[in-house]
Image (cartoon, rainbow, N blue to C red; front, top):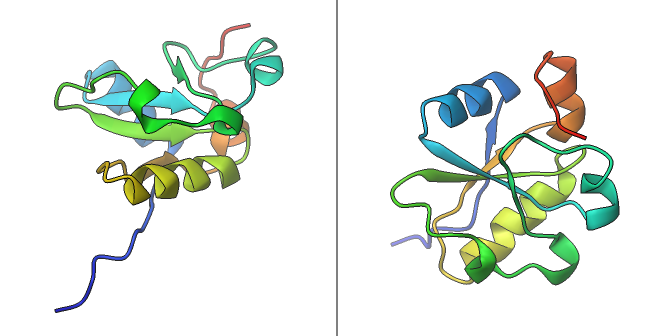
Length: 109
């Protein structure tokens, strides 16, 4: 039987926005505090990749955990790191906050 190798599922900004609106997702921003101080996703949980610990993510209570960053690279790293520690967190926001803003979605400053 083949091992489940870790994989990361890309979600579009629209899918994530809808999931947040419907309370089906928890958005975890893995950017650093100096970045999130300038601009952040509304309602996101901040867990910087430099000190990443999946245990710092609040219990999603059945919701899907979705990682996000600036462009989509660090969110993949965070998802893989969480999976290595046994967490079923396989989703990330493809394109990060750049794609989020390009889709016309709001940010907070």
